Image 1 (cartoon, rainbow, N blue to C red):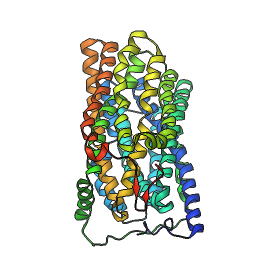
Image 2: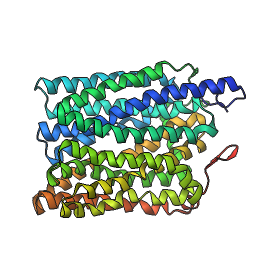
Image 3: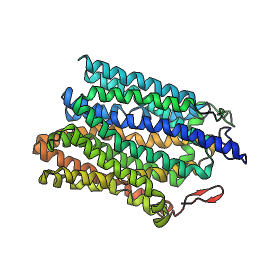
Image 4: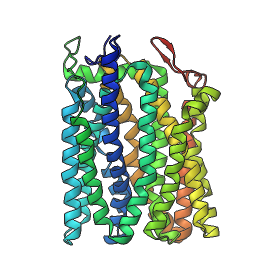
Length: 433
């Protein structure tokens, strides 16, 4: 069955090559946009902490607003994107994010910015992110054949890792020299590159009618039912949700820890995030080889290291050395792209094409619904621990506890269906992994 009218799985070599060229265009534009995203992830909380003097709970709320749209709208967006041409909506999402982040920069530069501006802009931008994310994963199989999906996802994850490496460094330098407002403005302009990349795509995309003609409510339930009845997808989503909860706490506490416990400058704080992002690039590069040697199931179990290593945060405070926290960030970030590449590829391969958008949106809704809760919990934990044990000790303890909480997802990964997976399969048989 062809995917959304694309020629990528056909025998026409010219059409397949054209699809891969379009993938490269989308990849380039998205790679630039991802750098902007990483600038924003550093610049927005830095703006709140350094300019607006935000507290731990307020930083947690800001992080929550940036991820609230998936649990609220993800299922509806998934059903909608399954039956429309995704690309126009993705372009619209890029342009709206451009306007939102430029507005934050303008308000900050004119001394008119308040925390509520950041909350509203972050929430609206998160809606755009949902539309883009679901559309992106649904549109990708239009451009490339199924046997190219692992490589395509690996390239996209590598771009994300490179962005995590370069984005914080750029944001730290701009924030240090010119202030966080201009760092946010740089992020806004990056969405132009993403929209331009999408506009150059020539591979035709057709809407996919629902073969049953079912109403929207049933269409949404169809995606949820498929994922629930597929044990591998069900347990992976549960594990991801618990991991995202704990890592959202880590992300919320981390900048507070770097600025207020370690007393680092924005440039040094960005260096910590950059070191972790360089590890993520390495993780994206070696992920396929790891799966080949260890098997997909054991590799997914090993990715729990991402959170567990943050138990060493008190050591960084005790030594007062930024090198220790850089090493922790490096080891932690190594495993995120390995998890993402493996899980996304697996989901794309075993999901029927007409359900892909809904299943992806269902999985993302489950996976990400815990992030706003974890962000608020992390902010509250940071505030309570700082008051109970002092700011330095309290933030270090909170960061260690948040990282260790990732072990809660391991029971789901120990299910037999997951831990025994060795190779990822397509309809044509084993993939090169």
